[in-house]
Length: 505
Image (cartoon, rainbow, N blue to C red; front, side, top):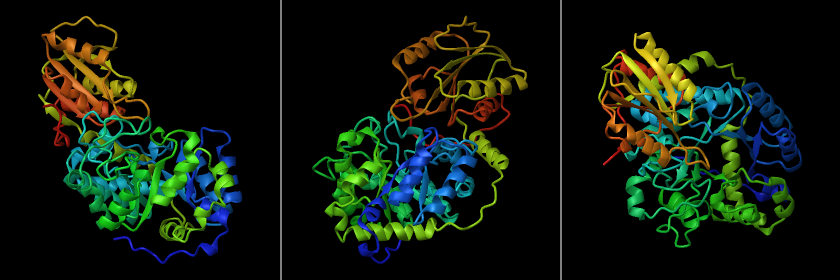
């Protein structure tokens, strides 16, 4: 378990610099002024670090080195890497969603993914991984966790989450497990509004908390609370981010966690708008958060609040102690990192995609001619190119490929292959199949020929269409995923993966 260091002396920092250590703003490389602002935040305020969005490997690497060189203290550079560095930084390796690893259920494969992610992060100067997702996705209609979770089985999430956490930290990257005490039962996206989970503590201990307990036992150093309210845990029904009973009572006292608590983004609408940001930052810090992530106006907050008497409170020293101890372990810098073998890493990601293909029903394609019909926009060209190339390579004739709402002429002598791609994305509810699409697909039930459904991303939509003869689920939108589906349909690859969630009645 993480060992709590000695309390940091608040006398060691001036008030503005002490306050700045509690903030971790963003660098968005798609914003032309972002780097200049970051330099000012380091030089003039001494912020704790940054969360990285966009950019390519060379630019990110150059920027982190420059900022580290001008900073008075070591900096955290964090990034959402649930799917690898390529999730946020172009040129990095992009893996399938976490549910692919749940389907494969092989610790060695997951350790390789975590080690690749850590190696590419360190090469870019990044040292804080906002991963793994330890949510247990018990709600099939969850619009924001969904396929980002390993499974709906607490034991499997515990095992795989513990492996991912342990490997990242062994490789020198701080793992931040999310979203405590669990975002897997929500029907709303916390980017857009405040979700509410009506579970008792007893039920949470059975279904949602075991993965966090396992990770803490494996010396997890950092936890991210959910912007979700749990009335059974806090009668005030505030988000876990702002709940002392959740952060101090449950996480620290009951579960024995002594590491860092880093909030989720403060730009998410679950916490309200910009007008209440100062109040929310102070409330989060007062109730157990150590670092506030991604505030909208970090400079303004520090100019307005740095002399706030809150930052004179000796209790702040406990948070500062945790921050500097974690920086000593993971943000000291100075080591030379060799360039990763990005080509080999990409092959590993492709292999994860191929191995994760799950046959839910049916099996090998019966016919020699297919008509491909695609629903959804996620990665359609990549998926369809890989699928059609794989089928054609095995002498299956692809008579045409169409995208809804196009209506092809259906001939029962051809097999109908329906491709449905959907996955969670902030503020979109993209993983929920629109009713017009669901009605269109349901209308295909009267087709008398062979009917095949391929889901890419979320597997849950398959439950809506029980009339398909064959159903195969994959967990990303890549060319490799399309090719893997073709290999399963043609019998070139025997699927050994098992769907790690329950779908349907």
